[in-house]
Image (cartoon, rainbow, N blue to C red; front, side, top):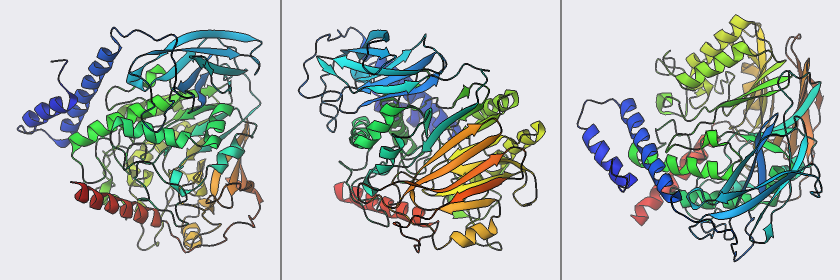
Length: 580
């Protein structure tokens, strides 16, 4: 292969020859993806060869504008992250050469007790981002860290390692969040999250949104504006992450705790499935877009080298154990799935959606998950993931409708997992979910059709940080959905996050919400609290407190989110016609 050939030329040559053969769609997109990965890998290799590291850079402005972060903690290790970006909304503003960055990690925030320090090169091929995997740390220990370059010093971050595997742990506390459309509101929830007493934060996807300015509009109106049109190229994605990180509350939440992240769809584009774009793109064009999006995601997240993208592929599913208390199996329900059935959207189940060969996680990840669950001996088995797991009919009992983008669109995949849990006699499963911009609490039933069947676990669905705008206590369809889905015990439509407290026998989930996000400064409160004990019948609500400042009821319904995305896509289509 000619190393000087561009990705576009390679794709053109390969697709031209492949399409002349009897190759099915799955083989075609898999082959194209591998070719894209090889081309990008060659480009990265070429870019680092023979480039001298600038040990004394001069920045035209403060370079640590995007803050600091830590993540993927282990008992003896953690990832420290930053990115040099003196002109963050214009590609970063760095010259195309490697720059030396110094890092320190200490036992105290004044860095009088530095335990490790070193130097690393921030390289242009990864947007001058830095991912330091610090090893040799003590387990279950709080540390502080910072970076220095060219006479400038970053903000100080705080992080924490995990307990050693098998260690007897009495309790832990963490929060999870998702869905933060910049235009729909202010990231006030992160201001409050940063002040919590937590061991860890999970982010479950939709960290950015790909839309151009005012394409995706919330019911309460957009209050901020995306810079630049719909993002397609690598620099577009870099600029969008930089804009989101311009929010001081988001930076504060990153600096306060280690994060474990996974993505959903909007880190690339709405409702993509594996290498199948949403609408209006060729597979070849989408593969290049996905490769750019995945690289930008890695560049802006505190991830290990094991997650470094290979073209349009990136390994995100991974697991963490918190002593003998909890095992966390972080899933990727977007990269490996079959295309959504029935044209996506909402529909009843059909032979297509019920096809037993359909996969949501992909064969390799599904096997990895069932193997890990089968070997787990911790008190809790936790699945931090993206999309609604429990069955959820939001039409009528006689004419049901299910989301084809959720686990309901892949019922055979869910049934395979449920079968494994039944074989093991599991009752300690907890699924953590984002995506749907509302709070839900569900009992996971051995058979959702029979409400009296055994409860094998629970699902806590967290609302959005901002996506969907202000929200309300209830929607027009709330009572109907709850009445015909008896395993769903709670719904709320305000914005916020979920705080979880675990002991060996009890899980507590607090739904922390804001009355509004279209103005800054909202106070936070706990709308409801639930506990789940493995030896009880199911979820138990222990607190329910109204939010007097918030709207109590709206005329919105579940399918309004899909309608809003369709309107956004129509705006994109019209804009493309005008610009072409």
